[in-house]
Image 1 (cartoon, helix red, strand yellow):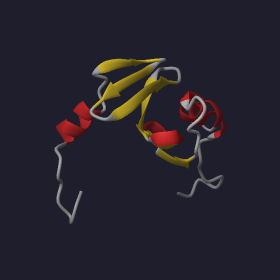
Image 2: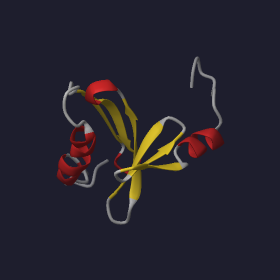
Image 3: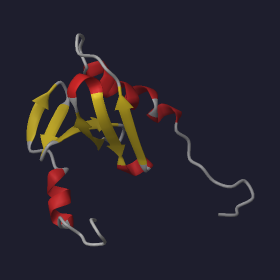
Length: 102
């Protein structure tokens, strides 16, 4: 949305998050998004991958957006890109109200 108007179609968004090629090391690629399968049953998280470990990662089924401003230009950034899936997602728990009030 921009100025209250939809600028790309829902179909384009769906296509952009559909794996188009295998990018190696478990990653898929679609329309500038890095797509990483995770979980059981397997689902895709998507990420905008930047220089030196700068990333924004989205896990739709958890309503989760993670932004990392790490800086790792000398080492392997693969661990920076995968760590959130391995370390943060297991710590998420369903939320709800103990009294049943929502």
